Length: 640
Ligand code: PRX
Image 1 (cartoon, protein in one colour):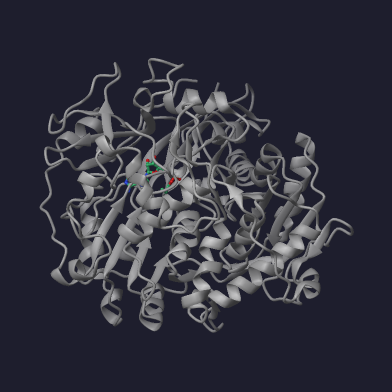
Image 2 (cartoon, rainbow, N blue to C red):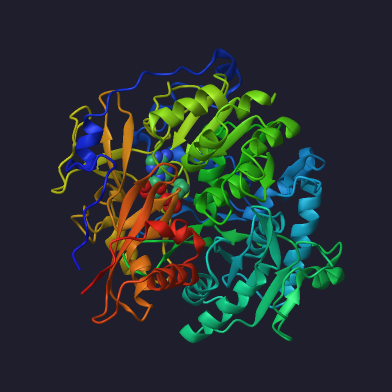
């Protein structure tokens, strides 16, 4: 079935690249003197220090932000290019760097302030000392369950403190965690369990979402069944309780397989586990992301490179100081949450707000009430949330007396109009905005401003983080120069510490997807031969700022979350009446893009609402509710 063309609201034949080229240049906004005076990174020479002529040694500065058990001997080992080994020879532990080393100065400072979705429920403040105690107990429990360094453990957890605790417990032992976004279906979780070869699943009985206590444990049963059908057995399902001591789900616990973590932990109170000194390049976690095939790929991130990168960018770009109150509204189930709720902020001794629910519950003033009450001064969210909050409560921020010094937007292009509302209303014209462009595979920010050094320009992510050297290539591999008005494929000339190590279990797919297009010497050990294909189209203005135009592959960025068109198409084909399915992105006022599904029915099957409902249900089961939040958009059903 031929794919319908991408639809735009104007219904024109103009490509996105051409639209961007004719988009008017926006005026600059300057950071305030007050912000500049306190910023962590205000040295304008930082870009000389991180010039390509200083690569890769410039990144020693990032490694120096971490505490090492044994020093590394080689900054970047390229002997197995493009499988980069950062800080080779070193020994390190991520849990130690995020927790233990903060105790000397910050034991009694809050690491996390957990804000439950029900407004009547009290916050839970967890100090670094408490985080340390809990992480040790869970690590001791995992060790006794026989899970060891290099094993994979899958998580299917909501936004609760137990999630970072369990992640850090895994990191302490060298166990590779693989958190599947809590909103994904049980089946989607099962296929990721299978791909990663996990024998343990960590989940929670329930959580609050939009005013309802969701029964989440039911997904674990589906996930275990789905994994088994694919050939992967799960021996243990560790179930956290949203209210310890009380089971808030309907599905029965399976004897021998399912265990309440809070019960197990009773035997581990006060237990301590030494953090394991792990090689720099040992994997820290897998993060599955959609690609061009129906099968999501597990981006593998290694300890030292990843941790150094998110630590440095949290410090220099997010501008986190230990005395700040930082709130990132992303979900830890996505890369943003891993990098900029858990690892980066904790390594900087941040105090972070962890919010369980949806930003607009019970109304569009919720985020601003939280910000006022807790004194949040750094705020981090995605354009979809910004559009939603603007639509539902354009003047809500004015009612609350919080003051942000810095704000971040991430995950999708932000249109200048939404940017200006974020700046004027949410930031009250006091806060800087960093528009950070990056992806699951890159570990941390690529395109961004350094907020005390660069002016902001609405709709453009800015130049690039220190040490990131982008280049835009056309289809033939020729460089597109800045200011030419032409769009092309955004690549990074050099590797950087946060870059993924490989796709779990599929090295060929890694080389082909990210380097296949522009590498001309497949045997080369020289990093210069391996520009990294990011997967986005972009245009660079004369001032060097990049505007990101969107994915160049079959991936739709829905509300900042990647969904593969092939994944949605295969979900549709599980409905017996469907002969063919095609998915295209359409523009959406709030979510940026949403998938629109076109299906062809098998001969003799009449079009009906019942079939539409089955297609929606199939997508909910195979992927999750995020794949079909607007069933009314399912259109174009036609019989073949
Ligand atoms: O298309 C880009 C878009 O999100 C994609 C990456 O999605 P994911 O791996 O889920 O990671 C999201 C969080 C980093 C990119 O290929 N994207 C991300 N940030 C921006 C963006 N598009 C425009 N501007 C951004 N700031």
